[in-house]
Length: 124
Image 1 (cartoon, rainbow, N blue to C red):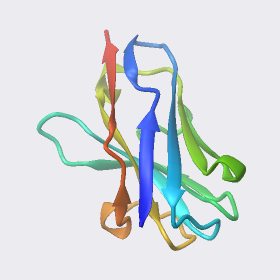
Image 2 (image 1 turned 45 degrees about the vertical axis):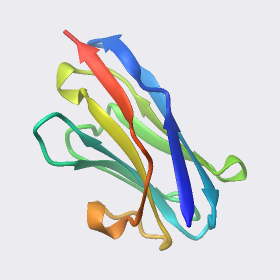
Image 3 (image 1 turned 90 degrees about the vertical axis):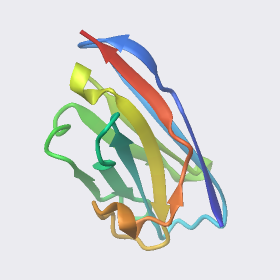
């Protein structure tokens, strides 16, 4: 099993920045991938960004390209999501996810492990 714990959410104003962190524990592997998804009230959970822990390959949703950056620190078993130029439409609960394969896919069903989520609220 893999346990994921997110942190770093909060209430900010439009244009501000936040950095989310996700610490993995348990049966973690460097040959794996981790991602961030988000879910706004009344909406489906959607892909945000993902990264391969070994190769560092990244992929992003079009809605966050150029504003968000995903990174990793394998020594700390931690993945980060740096969010800049935040918009009210970025308001959601952000979830960290992990899979035991190295390809950072965009499909939520590829990720069997999930954190509890952290709330990000962006006011206009």
